[in-house]
Length: 454
Ligand SMILES: NC(=O)C1=CN([C@@H]2O[C@H](COP(=O)(O)OP(=O)(O)OC[C@H]3O[C@@H](n4cnc5c(N)ncnc54)[C@H](OP(=O)(O)O)[C@@H]3O)[C@@H](O)[C@H]2O)C=CC1
Ligand SMILES: O=C1OC[C@@H](O)[C@H](O)[C@H]1O
Image (tube, rainbow, N blue to C red):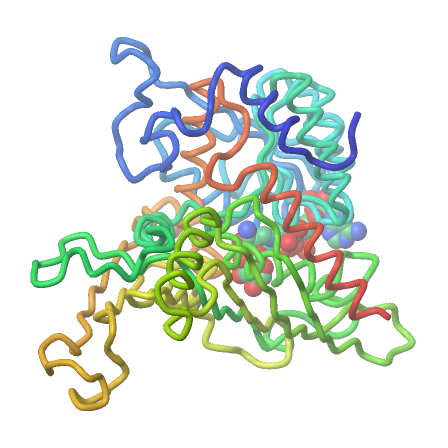
């Protein structure tokens, strides 16, 4: 079994399943944004009822259980904990019929179709392998594993057994992020003002060239230093594994499986007797935009015409970000292209809104006057489009059993419903967060940690 992903292997994977991402039905690719049943199944078929088993009973397991209660075609049939007392307590709280006092019993429960791995990340790999070897689909919380080769192993095992394997990068399923994805891109010639003078109904910002993202919290609001799992290395501590997956995922949204050309990272690791991970990381990355051919054509055409008007490189992008536990940051993600920028509003790892600010080509936005921009004042006015995607409201049953503990957790419905649609269409990975991106993101985090730990 190969330990590193390769293009060929992924293509073989798609071929084996009889699907290719590009031909996946739209409603399956785009999670829950439509409420109709998957287009691959006939309308006479009953929708698949997905039977979940929850592995672990911590904060995220609680919130995920709450979101599942909102969804009609999902049920939680069992929960497993390291102790039967804790499993029974959780089962009572969430009205779950079966409680198991070991994770092994949970993963071999015949009434479970899919195991949600909500234990701490140092254990994700072993718990997911256990579930897959028992014939269960798995949704593994982020970070899927703490080594890229372990994540690859899980995807390979899923492929071999024809079982769903996904990393819970839930951000990707929020409608505000789907909308953002649909508003970026456009090729290297994205400065052609082809819609000048027309009302732009579906504005795009062109290829993303600059990204800024941050996700920093005040760790003291969450758990005690140095013993909490935010910090303690044996529990997966360090913002590299808890916060950074979101920022790396935000960076890769426009570039898919294309990993960064170059990564630089600087971090703060407490000088402590206790074995703790980093409490902050700052980073930059550069990417190549996938439009090299037209970029080269454009460059050579410009050179042939007039070497002095040669445009700057159009096929490169730069991203910068900060994560950590030192103080709460604004938590927005900003994508900028030739035609404007999109702000994924706070909290950007689980957003309910986004704002697109369109910039007329050839003019300065950001308050420039007509003389600054060299154009007339009407064309230099940026237009703004704000979209809101409110979360489902928790029902009384959800509120009575404790509501949610983490920000916007009702948004787990999008990811969970995407899983159900995919499994019902016999498609066994997320097109929204592919195995290549998932494994690549872990490899990127490993590279940053290597730099920080030097
Ligand atoms: N997608 C998202 O929004 C979120 C994802 N996460 C991810 O989910 C995972 C769990 O996080 P979270 O729920 O916050 O963590 P918690 O500490 O709240 O819960 C972790 C659970 O793991 C089990 N566990 C197994 N071994 C240990 C151990 N040695 N020490 C402590 N607990 C252990 C426990 O369940 P039991 O006692 O039942 O066996 C415990 O309740 C992490 O990987 C995290 O990155 C976390 C928060 C949000
Ligand atoms: O995954 C997570 O880890 C960090 C938390 O602050 C955040 O709410 C959660 O989604």
